[in-house]
Length: 356
Image (cartoon, rainbow, N blue to C red):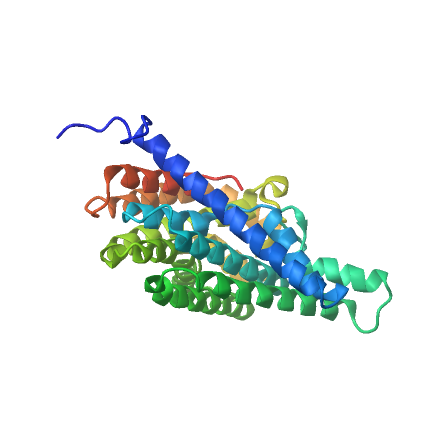
């Protein structure tokens, strides 16, 4: 078999062409989000000046950046399955995924009482401060959180409107994805409230909230839009392993990362008593960490020092490497072109070893 050294009709190496096509589609996703929100703002500006406030809050959060992981996996799943890069439906699906993620972030910040997101004050913080500074009636905190709930709900509505313009074949996965993230979020706050020391539950939450929501289902949505449901099993195995690696990286960044790079406060999970995958995994290995967590009254710095003293970060890094290897191995026999197998491997590595 002759090795393909350039992409037909372009003269580019396959990997470079793949990245160029993907980047072009992601840029179209950005344009779709921007044009959609601009049109909504124009529509509501004719109603009342207050009616644009929620749309502006969404626009600000979208414009603040983000990694666009879910759109990227959706697009890659579509292209790896042989889908048409010119299909506007896949752009709509990817834009809907990002809008759903914005909804989840706004609500998550309320649940976690987080003050910053993507390097800026969170929605509920902005509106609480606005209420207080203007001397409005009622409680500032409740106003801010109320506005954030509505802004998140609006993003949820918009996400469905965008995905309605995508190929119907992906809708079953879309509905499951939305259920997954909501159920996973409930399990997350319930485990924190119960202070449940259950590594199995921590892993289940990571599987639902990250493996399925972030990687597995966006990939299968893309493949389904291309008429390739046969890729679902391979993409599920890849997504669940790589998703666990992604979650462990998130946990490490929360514990030891630089807030200036991540755009959110360090140690937030410790302060909120979240039973993260990192803590669950560490407690399985080290009884001293289990005792520290279950005794209560610990500070984030104490937990951080214990994790460092017992070498947990180094062991987690090895575990991440194993998960990435396992996930990529799941693609070995998948009926996709080698160039897309390589791209998915590269995406797994980039995500599992990111610093933001």
